[in-house]
Length: 475
Ligand code: NAD
Image (cartoon, rainbow, N blue to C red; front, side):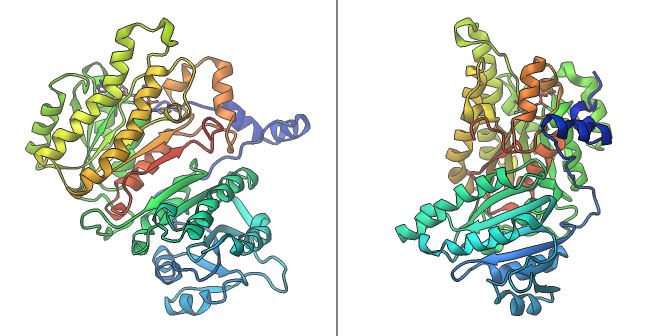
């Protein structure tokens, strides 16, 4: 099959046609909205951002110049009068939202700074802001709440209220509908200036299929330099993408190239034709190699060193061999665990120890919601993908010492050849049982990987972010 064949969701098209929309209404069927997706040259956010906050919000000072740099327009809820002078100082267009308790204009995004909340008794400010603004967010809008990581709060009451934010954001993600993504970003004290790459991702259509996630931003690993050009943050970088001949991997290669990188596209020798096609399309290089082979780590170290070192490694290659464990042959277990997990651990250690992955490097892994929730017939796969989460969390501090970050995306139902092979009823359930009532596209996973890979994402390590439209699996 052709590598870039787009798997289609015909119900999505039908429900967006005039006749289909009426029928879906009449029958009470889900009405998935066509998600807005990023196109090069677009502004970060099309429409204004409404700001709110509680207590003594601590992010406002850094947010004003960031919004200015993004070219965003902001308006402030009545609870946040201190925004005006800060915004004016940053040269940002701003105004007050709503008059006399009446809602103001429709906005594309809401941002609530909860970093100043020290106690649950201050939660009224959350109620007021979201009660007032809930109906004013445009379709495909974005909501971001910024808090402090509870585990780092010295005061237990502060830790409690900061932890409580997760229940609010995850519920809003289910309530707001209209394909609005809602996220909670915990920013460590002192790391406020590291949040820009994350806001640019979460406020833009790049995060089309990401919702109900909790993201932690901390002190920068390594230098943490912001890109000189936000449109091409990976300019001059060399990126290895495994499993690049088709599906999600082909899309990752495209997004990395769009972001300015030279892409080394890797896949098994049997996939050479598709691999060559992708490599030509992204003006990169093809590398035919089975990562499951014992000699793969050394072969990659040699290739990277011959290339002057690599900056980013994306472990996208993965396989499934589904059977209940009672019916599973031993080699099915071994193959899946080896390709999806053990070999990636060996490759990472070899690339980091040899310096073939440069200081300031990025490792991005691909887990799965099956690894988080478990799935019938996937003990081997879910073991390997939960292992990817473990690998990211356990190696983050180890690799940080070398200036390298490690993170993972955990895709939900993504329209690819892998999911096209799933039986119809299960496929349809996977597609619809999420807050967006549709599957994601490979590009949605690729955009999240682009965000992790950016030089500006030095404050992000040890994170696992789901790209699943808030799938109810393992929610
Ligand atoms: P896919 O099968 O279309 O592509 C995977 C690619 O990896 C293939 O080109 C394959 O040849 C390559 N590969 C497999 N074993 C390899 C090896 N030993 N060495 C080199 N290359 C190898 O799958 P996809 O749907 O594009 O999935 C990509 C990743 O996303 C996988 O890790 C998968 O587990 C994960 N994922 C996918 C979904 C989904 O809905 N499609 C959901 C969750 C996670």
